[in-house]
Length: 474
Image (cartoon, rainbow, N blue to C red):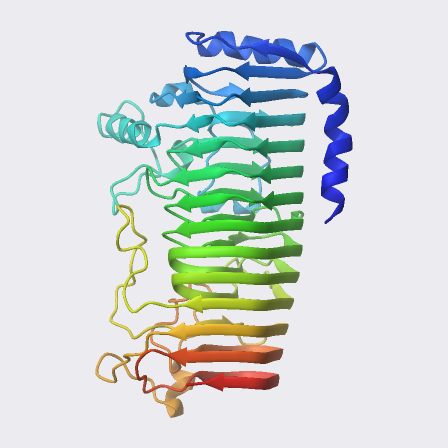
């Protein structure tokens, strides 16, 4: 992945040398700003420069060869009217039935090449006000959301715009800017290639389902030096297209807080996830997993290397799941390397101080271990865990829930269920729970307790080729 720096320097050098600046003026309406973008693109490319000031905008479409440059003090404020956001057409795929992918955005692009957003300014979606306006219009019968979530009393993700919605684009660079307050997902990239996301500050806690960065069926992506604070998954890799997937993705030197998982593969997992590199990740106050790798819709997940992840006050260190919720499509999870991972698991909710908190499970339970679980007749293969340090709180009670070892086979399989480290209910171990695996090595693994726990540190079932070297639990 070292080719990124030189590749993108060469890629953007001609544009930078020949770029013409087009200056936006405060008070310009969305139509005038769009005309400026169109003019820059027709002229062979250039920069649309936003100087210090506030710019109220509706949906803007980036065109080939155009860079939006936000100088320090420049702020793009998203319209709070849902009528200012139009869907971006995307390829129909098997995963569309899951209905969790918005096709609207504040800044959108479709099949563009050589686009960029740079600078030190801010893009603010004003998402809470926008989402509440969408909610009100639904209840007034003006703008009906057919997928409205009655149980949770909120409009669906389909009608709430993202901050960025980039579809089918090549050679994309987003660098330096701060992005905040989407009505839904933050930065969404669908079927893109050659993407660099560098030194971004993403605060996306204005409403529910607020992911930080979503990469869907993308190739050749570098995410580095970013700070993400999100109400849902921090950095999420998804695949809705069985004929595509995510490939050659590097995520490095990022800091993540989340009321869901910090880095997650899935749950939409139809195409492959291959050649993924993760390193230097700092996770804080995160409700679910520091790293979750999930194939439940037929995806092949292979050649994943994660190194140097440090998680503090995080609900779970690691979750690896191979399930089967999409008919007869069998997936695979294999060749996974997790090294130099440290985690501290609290007794209470890690996100208790957040205004938007992830939904808790609906049963009493002791602290969950980290599960690595395939399903009968389809096992996870070839996993290495090396140099692992996890501190658990202990304090388990047999009166709370009790699965003795002679009943470990009673843990439900839940092959078709939504994947989450809490999905199996009470588990008979406090450190790791291993099930349906062919080939797993635990080398230099240290698990420790802050208080007593009656369960063993590790329980395995239907595991072949288990290697344990310097495994310590206390």
